[in-house]
Every structure is written in C-alpha cells, then in structure tokens.
Length: 138
Image (cartoon, rainbow, N blue to C red; front, top):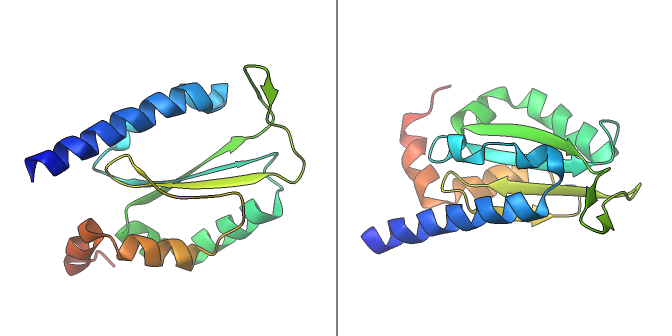
C-alpha cells in the first residue's frame, strides 16, 4: 500500500514536471498540485472557444451538473495558439483533451472529441471512484 502511494506521488511529480515543460506558457503558471487528491481535471486545448469539440463538451457539461459534482470534476481550457520552444502549436483543426486523476496521473488523452459519458464511465471504473459512489452528493 505504501509503495502504491509513493508511485502515485511520483506520478504526480512527473506529471507536474511534464506539464511545466510541454504545456503552453499560459498553463505553466497553472497550479495543478492544489487539486491533487481533491479533484479530477479535464484539460482541453483548442485554437479558440469556438472549436466544435469544445462547444460540444461544454454543452454536455452543462447538462450533467450533478454527475460532474459527484465525480469532483473541474474543466480548464487553454488556447492552442502558442509557441513551445521552436514548435508552434497552431493547427486550425487541433483539439486535445486530457483527464487528470485525483492522484495527478493522466487517465485519458486524445486528439479527438469524446462524449462526456465515456469519461464518466472511465472515472467510474477507478477504485477511488468506486468508494466515492457510496456517498453521492446529488
């Protein structure tokens, strides 16, 4: 058990290090560590707020307030129009979504749109979530 906890802490530290290096400048000031063990986080990256996949996700989130609350989910969106080193992330069709678990690990990553119900199913399959389901808030 202690080894598992250390692995999760190490995963969180690696994720934080990875995010500092690989994520656009706007996200580098993002304090992921303040959400560890409290929230699951959906991070999205797109060219702008009008990206169809982002609009779809936000609409689904509005329709599922209770489910989001029960899963302790937060959503943060960042623009893709940045330079990272010598690379430019601009791509007018690009979309990226990450699901970060409470332990700070990446649980899901895709460059395609995903239905929110699919993320719920993934979260609900996790052992920590199984325990939480006994104490639903709504």
